[in-house]
Image: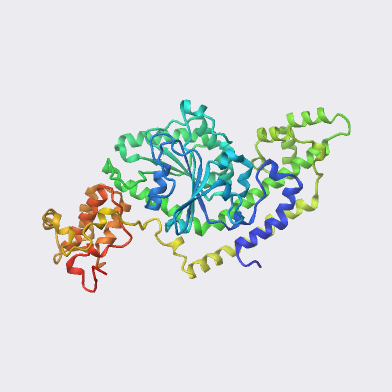
Length: 519
């Protein structure tokens, strides 16, 4: 019995699947051989979308803070791939350094050349969210005349490489820009085999009224149905994933519910990462087995004389080879690789150098699917229980609901002063408080919420402000706490970030017992 599922999966792959992949050149046709970091890496979330759909802003919203290398603009601002990862100190790691680090799962990216590596970086930052996941930021996909611009590397192949390894793919669409360019369509085509990982986010939806939103949502669903060739497409999350006030407040409850659903999905990734790895290895095993059957069949069909003409014939009639193998081995057609890609790749090879059919290798991967993978599946519930016992709060706790962000200059105003800084603007807050229904001099959480949402700030930001202002944690606001909450809301509307904890100088005088403001 293996110590844990990841270690067991790693050993099963090396002992049972890797020999088959090497024997029939699977890594040259489909995907590079897996290495230890591919099994050990934390879950990754990849964002894909046309330029100016809000990918970088979305990442900032998740983290609750700026991060190194962040650039936001209406024109394409990201021309390469970036990994946003956890570190105690902010910093950048160039792509050429990343791909030689044996502890990171990026070594196989070497195959895409120096032009790509010069546009590949890792951005490290200290964020609670990144303790449990890493984020892959991709170049804004081009449209119109911009599509003619060469990136200097095979963009779709790199995208495919990441899609096979990440745990979640979020396709972002701008509510005002639903047209799907040719490059975007090609990008979707290469990630489509990972359909179970894909989620759709319709961003900037607060700029639409309800009628416009219904029309835009319907148009997006229609476009996606055509690309994914299905009457029902993937889950679409509707909202505005940033920390600015909402332009149209009528859909606030919808946006809050959608945001919570999406963040719950992302929060669950660390817990289900092992299941995802198992699923990916099972898919890989099926493809590797089919690939071995194709290659060995082509080798078997080669004559001693007239090799070139026979090779051309086999490639042109590859569809017939597929049908024969499906019938002979009872394999579903969906397990076979893209025939156009295979024809292109096969042109480069001498079929006489392919290895013949090896029953032992095929039996070994069949045993892996039938016996070893189910064994590993039985270990997963126990692994999850152990994670809970170990207090893995990044998996279960609200890492996406509470993002700790260092304060800005506005938050620091009033440090070292004897008077409470909130008193300067308190009169209008007290007037509002006096007009509200009270219980023993305090307002309930529901009453406070009604007032706070008038700011049109996202629920995520208001949740932070509530936690900072409800100092005695009784679920109600007295006049001091209400004034503090309104003060913080105004700071947020001016662009300030909320701190992880309430600074001592902002604690109301009535609640300062035991605090030394000058410590």
